[in-house]
Image 1 (cartoon, helix red, strand yellow):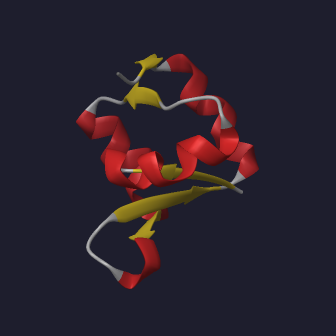
Image 2 (cartoon, one colour; image 1 turned 90 degrees about the vertical axis):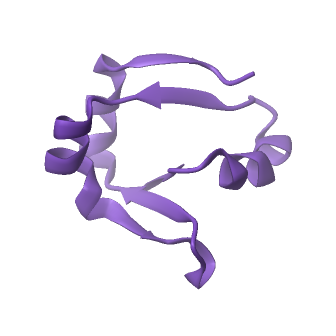
Length: 70
């Protein structure tokens, strides 16, 4: 599994521990709904959303626009 955050607030919690910064990935909404929304779950039971994406699906994310989050 690989974990992704829908909101930057979650990423900001973990970024200092991994030392690689935050990478923003932009996925067209129709593709997100079709391919990734099913992996959404509440982060620690709260209002923020994380995505638990299976390793078999992670490689698909490489086709989307990305940049280092400022």
